[in-house]
Length: 124
Image (cartoon, rainbow, N blue to C red; front, side, top):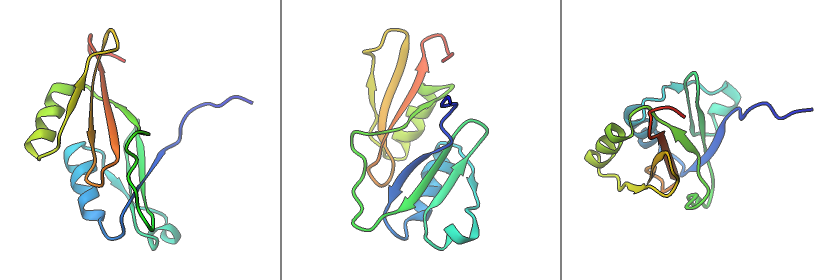
């Protein structure tokens, strides 16, 4: 038995904030929303998926954001993404502590930490 891949990352959000999730994950990050199965859709939240990434946001009572635990998303143009995030009012912290890797951290609209990575040669 081998672990082959991560199917998706689950993050949490407050009830009724799906539009904020759409603006961030689909609008800024460019990850299209995909319909949730009918039985799960009534719980709230939203799923964002493309060929490479699946981020599912579920609603949690007594919501607390993930401030340390986080997904790390590989991006093709980190500088462009940083500009987009900052233009929309998101605080971005760049980090250069890993040789050969350009990375930055920000938070989604709910305070969940997100890492963005690009290798210094544009590959991962």
